[in-house]
Image (cartoon, each protein chain N blue to C red):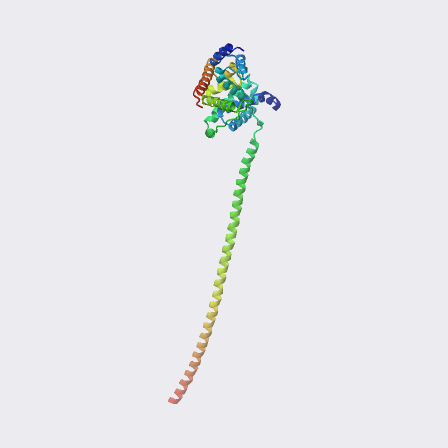
Length: 158
Length: 169
């Protein structure tokens, strides 16, 4: 391809008036490696375009999105939160029961202590009443003594 | 529409979709996600695909719109710039480096173009669609497409000459 022709095509190219065929001519000329020095800038441009065409999408395209697994995750989270709720509830009930048992044991212990002390008190009361009886015995003996003394005195006075 | 028919209809242009997405989103990962997402959408709407005369043009329009959405969304606010590895054969090392530099320069120059021109130059100079198809894809009149394309080409050329003359990269 003569240079004059190429230059004409470039003018058209810059005005965006070239057809695809004419652009193909330019493309082959500029990527051939045999470019006139004053047109090297275009070689860079076309070189870039050509090199860009070879870039491909290498991953495989999935048509069925992972929405199912996403849904599963949704349900899983619901299930997990439910399980958490239930376990917290059960745990709370169990804990309450345990707390009640501990409380009951404490109360029982306290009551036992109280009743033990009460028994001790009882003993003390018995002891007191024994001593009281002793005292009253002594008093009654004193009364007998007084009576006899009175009778003796009466007899003496007569 | 069966899966095999669907794939026959849409798979041939997957690379074009990917490249357009990459042109707009810059990062390869983003572009791969976009391509994947686009094919989900096409598959979901497979019943309607028969109604379109040109499925490929329709897919490219969808790609364009999807990428714009991505760019607007907050999710994509931290896009990374990724350059692909440029391969070159049998040139001297110095030339190679120079060439590589200028090639990645073209990449940057195109990146700096307005979105509309970016898309059009991608569709025309890389994917080689004819004007009719491009008009359909970007929903513009032929004259407007030509004007945008001409501007894009001239901008790239002028920038390249500027860099060439001043040796500034």
